Each structure stands twice: as structure tokens, then as C-alpha cells.
Image 1 (spheres, rainbow, N blue to C red):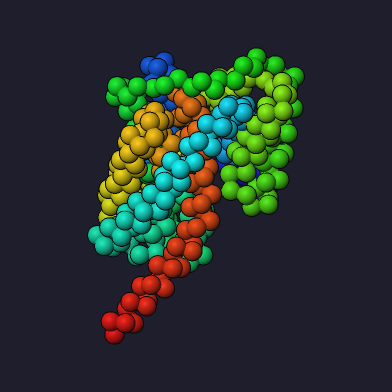
Image 2 (cartoon, helix red, strand yellow):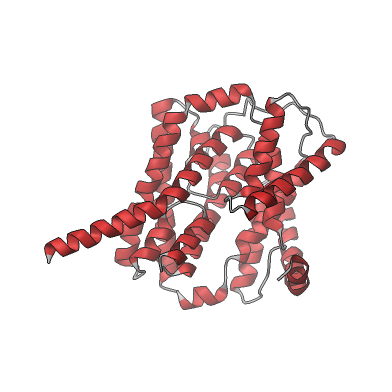
Length: 357
């Protein structure tokens, strides 16, 4: 189905999302809450869907939102930033390994108490990219809906709890020292965004995960490192990116699934809380071991989507490149390594079972 056809078919339900999502976002913005334009639409659209009013996100919204976000983040990467990231490579490696351990333990507990099969529990608990985990679940014969819902619940909790917790919980925020010194210039910004969208689309067609986020990011980083004058990405444009992601997160809540899997949802919530709490403990450990800012480490180790965590970091004006480096390395290694860990775990389970027999 073409993009135009999809847009026509979904238009009434997209309008419904905007009618309710935009006012809620505006109210939260007026109240000066963290990331209002993502949290507000997410809550509004999720509520509509759970009440039976099927509401959709804007077609191609994920790609557009990622291009805006990637372009806004790419210009933060300067030579001093890259040197600082290299110095934190051990911390980045530790958090990535801990993601496997935390996800594996969460999967073990979920499979024992929720009634969900081991395959589905495994792919639902590993904090990689949600689409990548859903695809692997399908490849290895797991049940996809629980996997998708478990990841959506975890990310939804994170985008609410982390910014509110940091903002109102008394956790000191160290302002980023990496603020790019560019002024707003639409004659530069518009062709730059178009180039990022084209590169992102090519990347995704080549099956690069999060291509529409990473291609503009690396484009901006390359240009900035080579002294090319770029443009600031205005706040209203990043607010649009927030809105697009909020609609996408809200759309994932389908009433039919929740009705069919009432017993699964509490266990998925407990699993999400466990994984988030364990990741928070890792953040505290990294904070003490490497003397990195606690608020930065909380977002850097959070088991959420790379785009959503980047939005949180940018909105709170924190060390975006550091946080992105942690998430980028985790997503790449977890997405690449999960299937091999699953295959190895399955082989070991079969081997030990045969030895007992």
C-alpha cells in the first residue's frame, strides 16, 4: 500500500489523534512539564485506543521525526566530544553487557510466572530495538504481540518517569558543555533536512536499523567536524518530532490485545519495572565508578528506544552525544548479538535436558 493510499485511509483516525493529542500536549507545555509534546499525545492517543476509539499516528511520522532529531543531535559532535566518548568506552561496554544480563534475568522471571512461553519472554525482555526484537521473535517462532507490547510499555514508562523523576526528584542536572554555536538559517536548514531524509530513506531500504535517525546524525556530525557552518534546529521543529513520536507510542496500545491478554499485562508491567530499576542500579554504579553525572547516566543506561531517550536528553539540555553513544553501542550490540545468545541458550538447555535423561 502506498504512502498516499495509507494517508487517505487513515486520515479520519489521524485527525482524531491530533484533535485530542495536540491540546493535551499544549496543556502540559503550559504547565511546563518535561517533554510535553511527546507525553501528552502519547497519553491522549493511548487512552482513545484503550477506550475503543481507534486512533492512528501520522503516516511516515517516525521517519520525519527521526530525521529532525538526528539533524538536531548531529551538530553536538565535536572533536572534544569524541575524545570524551573514547575516554568513556569502558563504561559504555559495561552498560551494554549489563543490558543482556538484566534482560535475561527478566525473561527468566517472566517465563516462570506469567505463562508466556520462554521464547516470547526472552525477546520481550532484552532491551534492544523494539522492531528488531519483534522481527527476531517472529523469526524464531515466538508470539509477536506480547513482545511488541512489552517493549511499548517499557518505553512509555521511561518517557514519563525519567524526565519527571530527574526534573522534580532533586537529581542534579549538569548542563551540557557541548552546545553547538550555530544560528538559525533556513537556507541551510531546509536542504540539510532534505539531504538527511534522503540518506535516511536509503539507509532504511538497505535495512539499517534507525536509519532515518542515524544517517542525518552522522551527516551533521561529519559536516560539523569538518568546519561546515550548519543551522540550529529550532525548538518548534523538535516539538513536532516529540509530537510524532508521542502519537506513535500511543497508537501501539490496542484495546483488542489488552482484552485478550489481561493476565499478561500485569506481568509485563512488573517486568518493565524490574528492568528499569536494574538499569537504574547500573547507572548509579557507573556514576560511582567513573564519576560521570548521575542524571546523564540514568538516561544513558535506560532500556528505552534510542530516539525517545535522545528526545529526553535534548529536552533536558543534557550531554546528548554521551547519551547517544551509550544507546547507539547498546542497540547495535544487542540487536546483533541477541539471536546468537538465544541460539546458545537454546542449545545449552537442550544439552542439559538430554544429559538429565
